[in-house]
Image 1 (cartoon, rainbow, N blue to C red):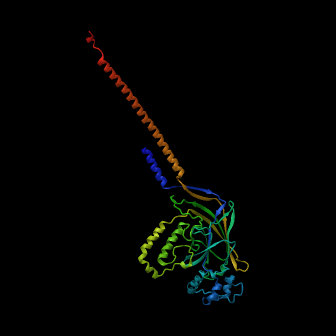
Image 2: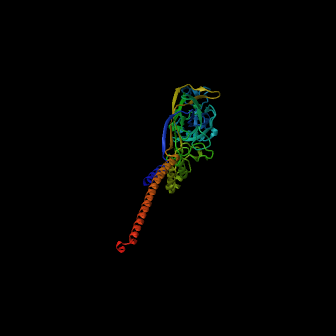
Image 3: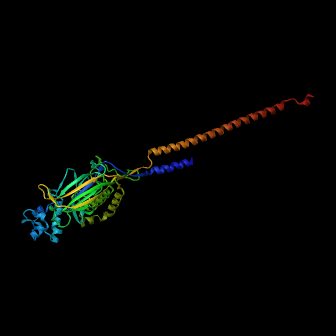
Length: 424
């Protein structure tokens, strides 16, 4: 009995931990979960429009002939009135950059000829920061927060390639800002994880054709509480409120840092991809001084927030190769020269890593059944022994009673029988 109790307690301890088994295998699925594609622009106002608005910050090239020889793309039409942003160091990194950044946050100054996307799909606009400058980004299939929208998928046969994303970018519209340095950056990443293409992506340059081949490398499925993987559902939900349920651990950490930044500086300094330009964080000395007495409180709240962050139940990992081919930019009707970017998805076997319950309810009931079987078996055996012992006691008692009765009768007969001497 003690052994059974110990076994039951040990099983309950294991079961109550909600441990999991990891199943990892290579599989093929015709329906492919597609990645997010993010393209970021340093400027979205054309140099032509900028110079019309800010003549004081622009000038004619010092040597128009040399300029047109080195940059023929800007001189295909009459270049006699060509104006370009001033190239002096103080103008480039002072007034011009600051003014151009202001237009970045105003959609009414987006150059409609800056890029052309093939096909129609919803885009998410965000901002990222790198080297003290902001970049405006447009993303396809981005799901940083839980919402009613579903991941994009595509049916592709085994080892086949399908076009997923195609864009033509008119880099010449903005290349005269900070000439010689990249203006556009591209990133391919998980739809659930924030990404900064300027820091971790690929620069797009004029004179090249970009072909990018992507494939899903690994998919991981975790289990929600009470299991040890302790993940948070990041599937579509019509009940989810906007910007409340992060779809990844990384996004949750960013939200915690953002809340800390909001409390400290009344601005957003935590997210990798920021949705509202008015929340950009430019701390002031006055604000810093006012929160010194709340520093410990804010830090404690942030640490608690970090501890409550959970990974998403679905994790997607992609790998891709960028092929950069020399290419003569071409014209599209009513547009300037374009730099083409094509993203293709190849469907191959990928690694599926799945966490399943180590002990389900069936295992629990099976264990209980075995224990009950053992217990009942031992109970019946014990009952038979007790019954046998009691029966033996009754039989022995009856034998003793009969023997005692016989002895008493014999004694009585001897006492009342006539003595031979008396008869004589």
